[in-house]
Length: 85
Image (cartoon, rainbow, N blue to C red; front, side, top):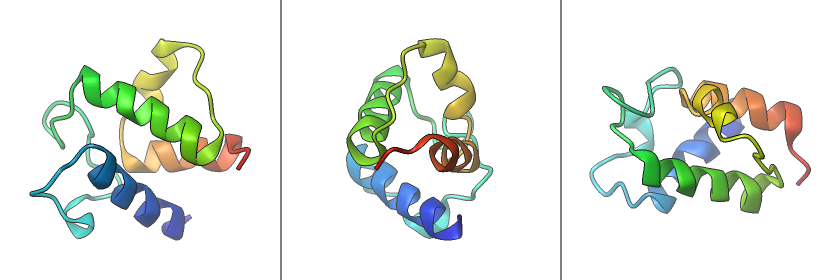
């Protein structure tokens, strides 16, 4: 699981072009939106594409995303339980 979380942090930084953020700057339980990393709705769409492309997970209900994308930890938990790739 630790490996998946590190991988996710790297992919989030890469996909969202977070040039001023390093993997070690992101804590597993940091909020991704709002006061945490400060991501927005466009970033949420990028995360949905990332989940589909990298892990074979399609989110059919956008409301699901709110709970899945709370933190790297919640994303990793969801991916571990649902990945097809």
